Length: 121
Image (cartoon, rainbow, N blue to C red; front, top):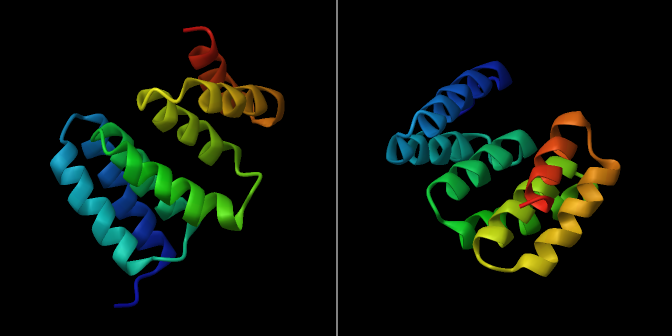
């Protein structure tokens, strides 16, 4: 199936709304569907990884962030920030801390704020 970038963005936004609204199962279904259609797009991979984190599937999120996003875009600060969150949740605090410190230094305002919040906990 061929879908436009705009359509994938809209569907992804619905997936995010489900995720942040607490409907993790529906979010997972939506994001995995979007991923199946737009498999090579980094924003879609990020959405899938974020929904995995919210669902508590940290290993899956780590795999997506490391092997899909950061393998292609090694300086993607949002990916590093969310990878840090997933690692932190798994108890891998030292590696998470390194990522958060890098994001604070190199990330944009939003990324740096999130990373700093995790460093201060």
